[in-house]
Image (cartoon, rainbow over all chains, first blue to last red; front, side, top):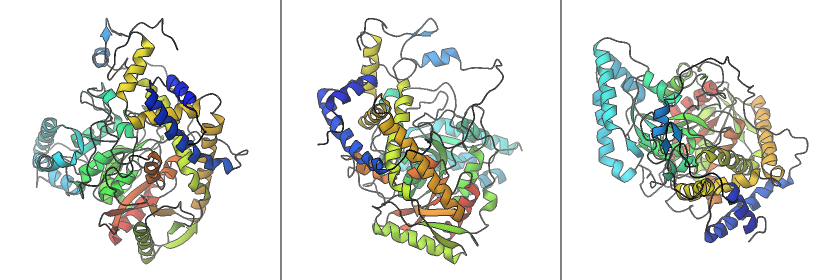
Length: 100
Length: 471
């Protein structure tokens, strides 16, 4: 197996991505990601020093408009689809006391 | 398969009714949907109501739209107000959007009748629909084979006659590849042509909505309806929709058609034989075949599978169990996020989120994502050079015909290779479409891909129409 990515890195990345992987999943993910990253080494042969990065295909400029009042989504219709809502707001578990 | 343009003509002239047309399609769904599984949801009652309304309008002499009475299926990653939209993911199961996607509004305004939401690889990540959380779609031409993906349900729905047309989304080939595998026409328009407002985002710099139809004329008709500037999508090109139906009979006389001499390897010989036949057809119709080189194309998989997962890892951060979809409760917020995402996302989605998060993370950004963006530029520059010498390019759509279920599921890279001919246009932002052009040695359809430069839809449709005449 390739050493291009370690299991420790995979576990760290899974925390960044807010995905909790079991040890078995982390093992499998490490081997699959390593296989892909090996394949992706094909671009290492290219000299890219003078190449401008391309982030999107169309030369768009930022779109500005007047700040005018307009109809928005119906609040109740939005909240009705949330896992938990209360008094016109989304309800979430305690936000302090966690450990990352 | 009933043609879209014939349905519109029949319904508006009164020789048939929208109700009769919708009932025919719903009857076909009833007969075969059990074995095909093209849909996550069939909206039969609403479809009958919408059809009845069209019939009333026709009877009353009111003007009806360009798609009057046409049964259309929508990929289940396009928002429909009050109607479940799942992306074939457990994390969104049961979610009813509070608004319609712009394409949905446009379809309704044109008199189309939406018959249901079609199955896809979860969050459009895959090439076979085997990544759907609700089970795969079968290819209507041979149910032991995949329909392609990710818009496999939309392709199957048209191929099986469940809908006269459908919409899909294409990030790396997700319209064109299933169109090829199911023997229908599939179009990925120029990036920014069709509004993405209400399309659940996968990779925002690559995603584009487009049509599936049974022929080129229907595709042109439907694309004209859904194209055009939308202030709700900041990447929407501020230009009116191009006229496409009007150019279909123009032919290709005098056109220069590109043959890529350094096409990435791995294409099946029977597919390459059909490509040669397509060049012969173009030559017979008066076009010149010109060799072009696209040397950076061999790096397209690497660029795509770094850029698309990077964008996806950011876009899919919104599924946090707070605002929509499902939640797995836990003691604190962070534990809730992780538990929700662990249970809600399937394996392929997690793999891409991981790959994307890694490619964007400190210490690896320059080596992976940064480099991929530069390779994207090289590919775009290759195309720009080629389009100085040619008007359009032909390639296979997919390296093979429809493959058997399970044959690529153990090896993510083998599945990714299905997209090798379709990915480059997404990276460049160009239009491309797949046109059925004969069959392979297994009697399954082969799709030929027509590529053109940015906003080159008219040229692309002229070539596609000529290919169709020769097939």
